[in-house]
Amino acid sequence: MDGILNINKPLGKTSFSIVSMVKRLSGEKRVGHAGTLDPAATGVLPVCLGQGTRITEFLMDDTKVYRAEIELGVTTDTYDADGEITQRGDPSGISLGQFESALSAFCGLTRQVPPMYSAIKYRGKPLYELAREGITVERKSRPVKIHSIELTDWQPPVAAIEVVCGKGTYIRSLAHDLGQALGCGAHLKSLVRSRCGLLDIKDALSITQLEDAFRYEYWQHFVYPIDAVLAHWAAIVVSDDAREDIRNGRPVLLDNAVSSTGGPPGPSAARSRCRAYALDGDFLAVLRFDPEKGQWHPEKVFQ
Image (tube, rainbow, N blue to C red):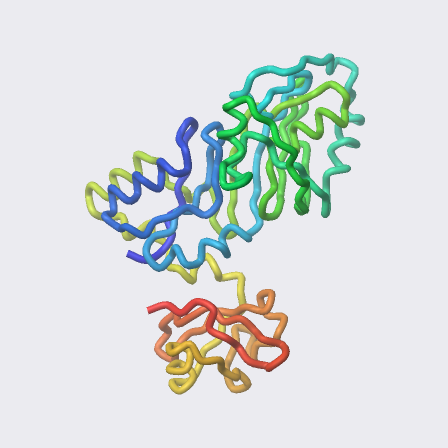
C-alpha cells in the first residue's frame, strides 16, 4: 500500500486524527501527512502511505495555495477565530486602497514570526503547550516566500484573499501582521488550503468518501502513485546496468540516459533532482545531482 491520498480535511479535525483514521481503515502502519492543517482550517491534506512516506519532505516543500478570510478590528491570542480576544480596534477608517497597499508589502521573500500557538518546538516542547500554560517565549523570525496575494472579496470588516506561498508560511501570522500594519488589529476568520503541489481540492476525498472507499474496497482508485506527485520534476530512463547501480545505492553518470526533454538531464533539472525509471517503466528512485563529481546519487530508492 504505497502512495498518497488527497484528503479534504474537515473543520474541527486535527491532521493527526486524519492520519490515525487512515491507519485504522487501511491497516498500514506507515502513514503520515505532508503539512499540518490547524483544526480550524480545512482543505487539502496529503496523506502518505507505505513507501509514500519517504517523499513527505518533497510534498512539504511544494508550493501551497490558501483561501483565507481576514477580519479586521479584532486581535486574538491564537491569531485565528478560535482564540481569546486580546484587543479590539476600529477598522472603519481602513479603505480598500489602504488594505491593498498593506497587503502587497507581504509579497516576496520576507521574514515571519511564528505564532505561539504552533507546533514549533522550544527546548523540546511544542509552543502551543507553553501557550496553554500562559507562557510566552521569544520566537525567532523565519524566512518565508509569498509568491502572490490576491484580494478576492472586500466586505469590511472582512476581506477574502488567495495566497500562493512556500513552505513554512503561517497564514494566521500573515493575518495578525496585516492587522498590526493597518493599526486596527486582525485575525484569521477562516482558512482553506485549496492546493498542495499538484494536489487540488477539487479532487480531494471527503471523510465519508474515504470511509466508503475502504468499506467497499475500491480505495485503490484514489491512491496516487508515489511518482505522480513528483510529475513536475525531470524524468529519465536508465539502462539495466544503471538500474542495478541505483538499486544498490551507487552513484551513476547519466550521459546516455533519456530525459523527458529528449536529452540527458542537466544539473539544474528539478532543482538538481530527477525521477529515474527502468526500461520497463518501473519507478526506481529520486536522484540528486552532485555538481562536484558530476554524478547523480540515489537519494530515495523505491522497491
